[in-house]
Length: 178
Image (cartoon, rainbow, N blue to C red; front, side, top):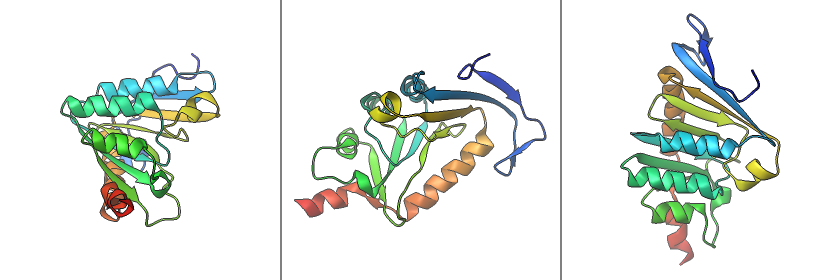
């Protein structure tokens, strides 16, 4: 089977990120050549409770639209962005706030270089893939989707909460610029 096809991996007794795994579904995606944006959008489209996002870059319109649609469906969507996303012009952060999505700026580190989504406390999307148009169209990137692994998702969600605790609302930046 070629990369990107769903794999069902039984990891009984195998430790990953310090937690014993149950059955987890692993999927990979690589650019150029595969539709990683589409795969990410599909995962967000199936969210029912919560999506936590950590992003260095977030400019992909399909991903932003999927997050906004999830929010409209009643999903709790929260986003942590690197401070490089603070811009005086209309940005992804502005779009997300206008959709009622909480956006925080992780500015206590040199670069908040995470590229992570935790979906429904059970699934993790990570890899080198920035959530940008360039990642899909111009770069060599990778995405790893780990489904049905709540222990791993809890570890990533805990990291999200730790970073959120030292971050500040994006609205503060916008208010200072007015």
